[in-house]
Amino acid sequence: MTNFLKSFHEDTCTLSGTKYLTANLYFKGVFKIHSQLLQVAKEPQNFMSPMVKEMKIKFDKFWSDYSLILLCAAVLDPRYKLNLLRYCYKKIHVDEFAAEEQVNKVVTKLYELFDEYKVLNPSPSITNPKPTKDPKIDLDILEFWKASSMSYPELASMARDLLNIPFSSVASESAFSIGKKATEATELDDTDEVMAVD
Figure 1 (tube, rainbow, N blue to C red):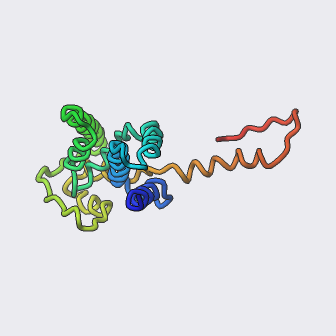
Figure 2 (cartoon, rainbow, N blue to C red):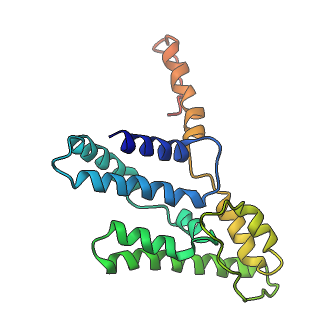
């Protein structure tokens, strides 16, 4: 139980933190939580199973359809590329066809985005791929794509844009929730009209 909760806590803090880490971390974090919930929910003899089933219902409501754009950001991590998505989707989906279908959606979206970036940046790019980085090595992914911008201008521009997408909305949600708290803190007459943003 301690290991489950510790890991769950760490991943949740990463996903809901206000540091706004690069978007390539989104899929790994959500996948880890998803796979832990699936694993414990399948163990009926586990005393945590009823609690985890309730957690999984809430998870499925918000996270079961991973954000396509943020999945594209995960693929743009040169240490993992499509291998990470294929591995994770095969773990989640029983049906291998369904897993590959999810990966193909991401590939299609990447091609669509890349075509748009080619229109914006018509300079030719070199197509020799760089070697894959070791996943165990700490990599400043934004620095990697900055350094790659001469060889792959369109791809580097797309990668920097996608990787800078904040995947946590906690900070913005808490900023907007102040309106409701302020309204609740004061007594209002029936004639007062107040618009609170939730």
